[in-house]
Structures are given as C-alpha cells and as structure tokens.
Image (tube, rainbow, N blue to C red; front, side, top):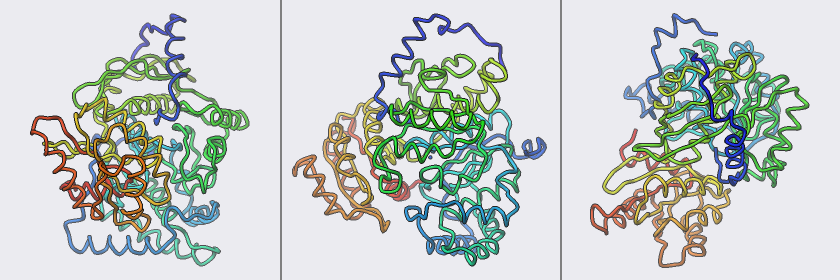
Amino acid sequence: MSEQQPRPFDDPDAFDEIVDAESDRDPDLAVIEAGSRTLRTQAGPPRGDQVPARPADPEVDKALREIEQELASRWGETKLEPSVSRIKALMDLLGEPQHAYPSIHITGTNGKTSTARMIEALLGAFELRTGRYTSPHVQSITERISLDGVPMEAERFIATYQDIKPYVDMVDASQDYRLSFFEVLTGMGYAAFADAPVDVAVVEVGMGGGWDATNVIDGSVAVITPISLDHTDRLGGTPAEIAAEKAGIIKQGATVILAQQPVEAAQVMLKKAVEADATVAREGMEFGVVSREVAVGGQLVTLRGLGGEYEEVFLPLHGAHQAHNASVALAAVEAFFGVGDQHARTLDMETVRAAFASVTSPGRLEVVRRSPTVILDAAHNPAGARVTADGVTEAFGFSRLIGVVGASDDKDVKAVLEAFEPVFTEIVVTQNSSHRAMNADELAAIAVEVFGDERVVVEPRLDDALEAAITLAEEEAEYSGAGVLVTGSVITVGEARLLLGKG
C-alpha cells in the first residue's frame, strides 16, 4: 500500500462540490449482478474473462448438454418459492462449503455483474485467489462460476455437478419442492470455491436478497448497487419495498457499500444497517467519482476511495454508470482490506490501475463488429436503458443509430423503448429463443406507439433482424458514423453475440 497523498477533499468547499454533484445525480440514471499462496502462484494472474464457446470435445459437450437439460427441467430463475430452506439443506449435506472463505455479497437492480467483475479484478491484482458467482450468463452456463477471473472449464463444471448430484437428490426427496435451477447452481458455486480453494468469493444475488439462494453466506462486505423498479411482481412495486428485500443481505457487523439510491430506498437500507450494527459507506459521501473523461476504448477516471484519491485510472468500459460501478467496487475492496476502519491509507495505486485496466464486461456496451459498428448491451429495464442510451451517445456519437430490440414479456417494455427513442433513428424489433421472449408482433405494436410506424421494422428471427439493422446502417457511406445497438435482454445479446461470431 502506498502512503496517502494530499487530497483536494481536505478543502471543505471542494468536498462539498463533489457531494453536491453526486447528490444531484438522478439515482435512476446512476446504474451503478482461505487458499494457499502456492496454489495462487501456480494459477497465475487473472487471464481475462472471456465468454467460453461450446466444448470442442464432443463427449464433454454431450455431458454438459445433459446437465443443462436436467437443470432446465427444474424451476427457472423467475419461478420462486421465497425461502432459503432448500439451499440450507443442501449446504448442510455438503458440509457448509460457503463458510470456508470470506465473501463479498452484491445486490441491487442494475450493474451487479459489472461491479462483481471489477471487485474480482481488484482482488486478483492483490494476489488473492477469487471465486465469482454471477447471473445470468451471456452465452455459456459455465460463465456463472469463475475461478481466478476465468469461467469454470466445462470438465470441471461437469465434475462439480456430478459431485453434488447425490446430495441434490437427497434434498429433492426431502422437501416440498425440488431445488430450483438457480439453487443447484448456487450449491455448485459454493462447493467449487471451497474445493479450489479460494481466498474470497464475490457473490451476486439472483433476485432480491433476503430469501435469495445466495444468502447463506456471511458476507463481511455487503454491496448494494442502485435500486430501481424491476421484478416488481416478486420484490414490490416501490423502491422502498424492493430495498426492504435487498437489505436482507446485510449481516450483523458487516460493512455496507451503498451506491446512490432513491431517498426512500436509502432510508430502508440505513435502518437495516443500524439494526445489524453495520458500518455504512455511501457513494457521494465517503467515496465517489471525482472526475471522468471519455478516452479511446473507455474512460479515464479519478475515484475517491475510503482511504484517499486514485487518479488517472483507465477503465476500458463505456458510460458514466461504469465509472460509478468502479467507485463502488473500489470501496468494497478497500472495506474488505480494512481501509477506512483499521487504517486510512490508499491501496497501491499502480495495482489498482492495472486491475481496472484489465476489466471486461461482455454484453455491456460491448463492441463486437466494426464497419458498421455493432454494440451489444443487456439493458432490460427502464433504468438500465436510460444509462445505456446516455453511454452510447457519449462514447460513440453516432450520426445514425439503429436499434435491434428483443425483450422478455415480463418487463416494462414501453418504458425501455421510451428510453431509447431519442437515440434510435430506426428500430428493428425481434425476439430471442427464450420461452419468456415477447412476441415480435406484440413488441412491434408497442414500438409503433413510441417511435411511429415509419421508424419500426419487424423481423421475428434474430439473424434477419441483425442483417436488416446492418443493412440500414450501411445505407449511408462507410465513414458516415452509423451504428447498431442490440439490446433488450441478456438472452438477445448472448444469441446475437454467437451470430456475430463471438464465442
């Protein structure tokens, strides 16, 4: 760790300006998902988190598909019985693997996965062996469980499933309902982390917090990204109701890293923190984004952490929301290392810079093609759509942007389209292969309400939709600055990624 440098925050007026800037930011736009050193040295530094393709070995691919089919026969991620009784029973049979390592637990509405990836990169840069559990996946189910920044290899994923399957069967037989798809994967992740072993787990909730299957860990650091309306049928119809459920990850004596929230959500979180005797660090007060500027391939940011200021940090991700995610991730890692509590020094500056420079977040304003530029973003609710629209406008400045949108039928699709209307010249509506996908004709009817008939193209097949959008973008000259943004659902983005030759 480096010695703390003089900070402009020593000037009360300067600090007040930062607080005012953070406080004035629309919270709905601030979208911020005990190993040995010998093993860590053998593993080497994180190698980058690429989205894996299907296994090349036909037998391995067959075995993985069989597991995917078995998991798909269980309750999906949107069908829930709000209880942790089944996952607790599984953990008990497995010997409580989730307690074999400290954990950082992440909830919120948007930005969870990007924040988790940044936390993972920072911890790995400080030579800790990491396990990361995130959802949903972009292309491969193996993405959900990562070790040292790399998705679990298919062979290891298969072996882990086979190891816990007898215990899964025992729980299934003893409970009123079988373990769900997500509960089985959560058990696999916790078992794999203990087996590795990892020094720290970075765990993203699936939905909510209190009764989420991940909530059997003792997260010493609880991270709460901004809350907005999503999954309202499960979590509640107001930010306060949603916050009450998500606050369930706050454990006794934990440190809470609180991104900027709607006031009513923040009040709920702070009340829960007091009840749990937890320490709270708030974005815009104890930490935050000091400055940011667009740079080639991302942005250059200065972050205020719990221990001081981190200047000229290159973040290879686009959008103001990713800068705020970075500030949350940095504060979480500082809290994990005791910065702001046990001591007040910054983490090593060069290590922090190297970690952030290595971050990837597939499917989040990800460029997958040039001439014309095609960007993928998994925005699927109004708050996410607004920051994506802002981010693509700031980073790319297209003269003409064609949207390709395929959404799920349980989302506030009209509000999502309204967020994109100012930036889309035309929109191609389509649908992905999920059973939850909104029918393209239904989506088109909503799109016509928002965009007008002349700006809407309907292509039910995603491959045809991509071709139509690229053709529209190419109608202008090669150097005209036209682009394509594929969005509306993680599944749509994942399928488009494959069609465009990624993975």
